[in-house]
Amino acid sequence: MHYWGVVHPFCFLFILILILLFVNFRIRKGRRYFSNENYPDSFSILDKRLASGEIDVEEYQKLKEILKQK
Image (cartoon, rainbow, N blue to C red; front, top):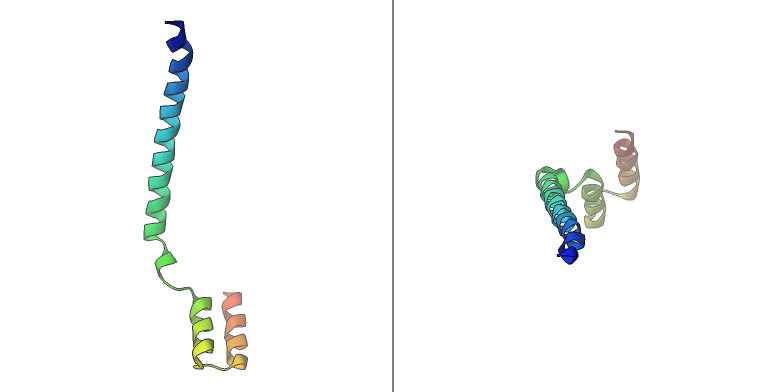
């Protein structure tokens, strides 16, 4: 009987931590789902345009400076 008296609070704490981790995971997953991470950012689009030859280095640097100001 004494054994459960010592273990019981730790079991309760363990279950509470599991619940908090689950809730935290669900909240963070929800934020990622509704964030703009699924869409490329301006800098990656600019990098792709430079790599494909759509813009030259001078225009790339100019546009990159403009984006940094915003």
